[in-house]
Length: 257
Length: 264
Image (spheres, helix red, strand yellow):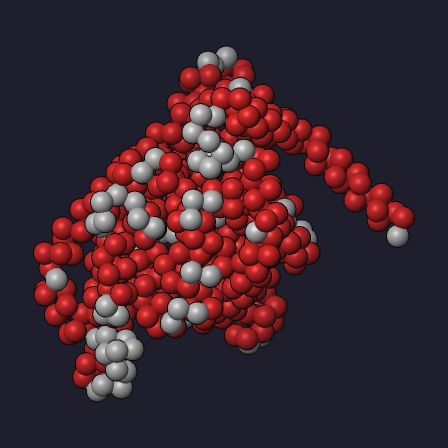
């Protein structure tokens, strides 16, 4: 308990120092020009000025990321269970899926827009980018089982479903949560990149960021980064808390490996 | 010499037998796709190019592809190298002090969770629409996995090692160089492995929005000019390049972390 309080205090003080340093270097002393690295004051003013635009562009992006993430989660769980069930499917598909994982997937975004287009393209890009880290961690997690456990299962004569429910799933949970954490960041990246290359109706945070680039408004670009960062960090944090509750028998690692 | 080529062949043979089902699946898909394009594709080769058309159009654009590969591949490689250097050095600095590490933790989580793509316009404003912003953004996007893994690895040394170091009177620097860095090496290696793909992703995202050059720019241009065969060729080039880069990095890393078989 003491360690937790100490960690929290140091983190809060550290963050306060970082923010103060930013303020001192930019707004207070003017050591760094606003045109190079905007200070908190100008970022905040920009955010206030463009408040309604930022909020209205935030919704489509968050929506695409969330829907894409959900599609990716459902698809990976279904596919992972199928792969575990049948070794021929696994042998055939796994190398392809692992290979696809090491290929830059966002490059397909323009093509998905070309063939599918409209709002569905946004969801599919986000899902496509988020799918692999989630899927691979689900498979990795469900696959690992120790020999003792295997022997125990055999002597208890368990069904496949029982094995999944009582052994493989609890074992897999830490890895699955790691995959989810990476996946939620990736889904948002997919949604934003989709907007960069023109998915949907010309709205969304990615589109707004491009507009900031065209206007070379660095402060607006910074405010967008700030807002997106806060939202993703919140989503990340929620996942951490859920993980802490679900896997209560083990300490939660913040960063996925 | 002869012996070496023999092991190469047997390694290839082992690889083929391991992935033969997948190879068959991929081959079958390509053949079906070609047959579909020849007999059933009513939208035309312009809309959904066949494998043959892709090859032909890629051949027509071979100089574009080579130039793009040079640009994008070079930027990704430069970005990867920068990310590894910056990530390991910063990670080592952070791992040295509990207070620095814990104090920066919220900022790091913020940076880690931040969808890196929204920063692309910022990089373009900073570094212009040239090669520099592509390299810089590629560095940024691949930096985090190296950095986070370095910190995790450097703080993962078991207490027995610390006690042994104390007992032997090792200095902080000696502990880092002779003990903790070696414990961290597998972690750093897996971080670099993730960074390889991300560096290509970063280069291409930056090219999408800024430079119009490189393979990322060619995808946008090819779609705009309705030359899907070219676009497919570009995608295949990117895939082959990232797989090659991944294999190359993996091989180098396997030499650096020889004892860890599970990672290879």
